[in-house]
Length: 149
Length: 265
Image 1 (cartoon, chains in turn green, blue):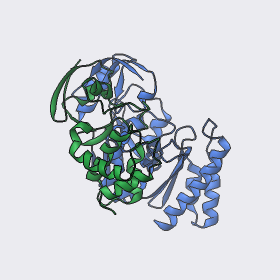
Image 2 (cartoon, one colour):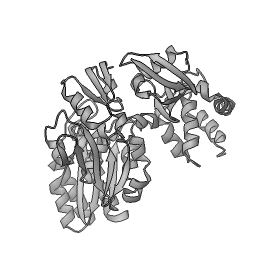
Image 3 (cartoon, each protein chain N blue to C red):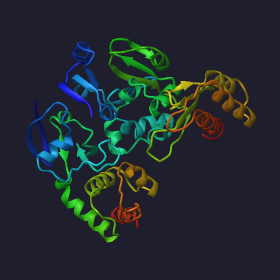
Image 4 (spheres, rainbow over the protein chains, first blue to last red):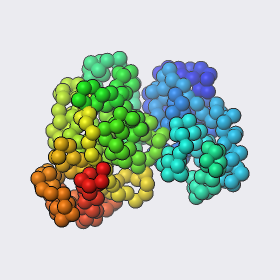
């Protein structure tokens, strides 16, 4: 089936199977930042923005995004680079596998929440799992990024 | 992962219902979040995204929630907070994460009648109604007890009243399924106590609710109500917890929720 949507402000036309997932389509189109982790919607590694809202691309049928705007981290590089500097300064990127999804969620959080508390940040990021860090270094970096410290 | 042979995105509920009715293998696709965990073979998927069913609107004495409203929209709704305080955000905050809730819909959470559902326990507690395309409007209690199949949930209707309500749950990690969940509310002096994830779907402790409604809200009576509710309802065992654990924990959560509703909020 034909589907048309935009990825990072560029039009994409694809022929997809009815049950093809957005994560698979995006990777097929060359957006390799989008990875599959758990395949159950728990880890957040596959996070992209659908109309600027964070969603799990491994849960979303490609056909559902007909006519919509998708943003991957390739399309949010400027903001992601700024955030990455704060995270790097705290040593909070190790293997990097969770990073694209994590960064996308944090940037979305910055737009959605004003002056979040530590609890608000933890709650917002509860859908992003990291095997490496234990989250404390990430939390420090995020607070500095949000200018909370 | 499920499989789909054909995909359709109708423009009207009538079209959606017609396609759905053509085969038992046809299915509504909302967020697809829980569907993804199974291996269902779907002949034609009916996507409701074009039906403008994503809304939370106050209409007179009621608030209407469209079936395709995301759980995140409900969690953060200013309208719902105005009338229900933190009730809905407390019920939904543990569900996986923001990204998941941006896809998962209220309609799926209700229509599927999942045992683990947090939103079902909350909506049952406040005596919500559901509006289905073929069946029409019915109380959520009747919907849960009945055998409605092959229909389409259009919207959920709840009272637009300032209601004191409390939601409690226990789970092994912050965003895991609940081991047991509890909702208590008080409307015009009448208490309602519901318990879900028993592991069966939400049920109301009517006798216990009537007891606390008709008696003074002393600690003794609150304790007695919690005990009665735990005795009134049935609990089961699975790999998450034993029936005894659920029953004991539910009693504690009910007591705390009643205290919040009766005394503090």
